[in-house]
Image (tube, rainbow, N blue to C red; front, side, top):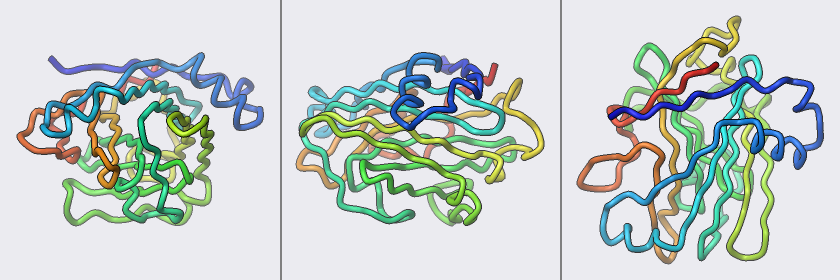
Length: 213
């Protein structure tokens, strides 16, 4: 059965605060959920001591995605946008527009983001400089095993939506993930289960619905 997230609008006045306070607002007022281990061995066994909570909310055309991660190892080697972020401790949000193309937003504890658009894993195009100019990412690390991240994603700077129309009332599709391809113990978690034989997050047929209310 297809999963659905009903993503609430957050009053912009609540978001007019410092980054840490904004994370708390999104965590409190957004729709909350957890990611579950995907049953790909040997990676499934590596997931048993990994936990990921998320919260999503929006204001006008900006989507706020908060993740709280607890994992045995935190890797943060990449420091620039559009590098191979999935090799690090990586939280991911994929969103599909009405034309079939989808964006993959992949972020690590260094606030580095990979963001591309396309119909499949191959032939993807990086988002415009205007997107990265308006993008905001805030991360906090707690000790050696826990970290938090808040992504403020200006969707009006992508081709996912009409830039002149609020997200209110729209329905998109997508999924949320956690991975770490170059961790000592790689793992893969998702919100909507990906029913493939091998790890592959670029599978829009397993996306769920994102309903903006």
